Length: 271
Ligand SMILES: [Zn+2]
Image 1 (cartoon, helix red, strand yellow):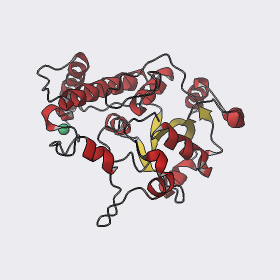
Image 2 (cartoon, rainbow, N blue to C red):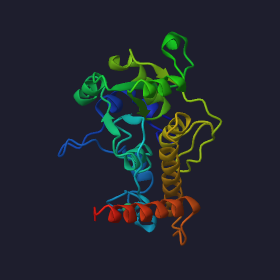
Image 3 (tube, protein in one colour):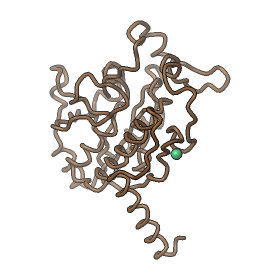
Image 4 (cartoon, rainbow, N blue to C red):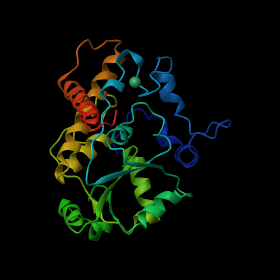
């Protein structure tokens, strides 16, 4: 969740657009918000793999990692098709991640089934700044002890603007019984593709990386951070039509990981 300078019209039409999404009548797919696409990027040639402008494609840097904790994204319909969305980076790096589209009146059946699965201990990631749910607030120790007890901790990340996130948090009965885990960090955002109201408001991929790091999944956190930095650099450079000639330090680490991963796979006879 975060502030989002790319939604100038949102406050004026909260019910129509937010409730229904903006659907393509032919395919039934949710459309990206019209204003954003017309304002920026609609004529850019994009890679089909990573959806970044082809000028600086992210695909060569895509690597996977494993983590003890999992991430489930609860994504606002207006967020899904935005190429600047960082929630999708989490699923690229951590293949066991789940992504659900949030509709107020129609909760995702698969999400409900997973919430009922006793193997998982889900936490809603949300700020602890309102008095009415203080009894549900926990800290990272709860995640660590879930692991110690043999369960799989799950970070439920609400992916949308702050305003959308608050709405999802308040209007989803299946989240009401879950512990609330706020992220407390000194980290300032490095996200360059949208303008945050405050540098302390992290984007979705950054929130996931910090949570993973704070709860012991250091390798996954580092890979996700590098992949996020590669995404951020590549996308920002493409916006000013600049081709990155050399990989940045995070990109180099990702390339090395890919190389050592495929060498390892060959050793195991998997290739
Ligand atoms: Zn690509």
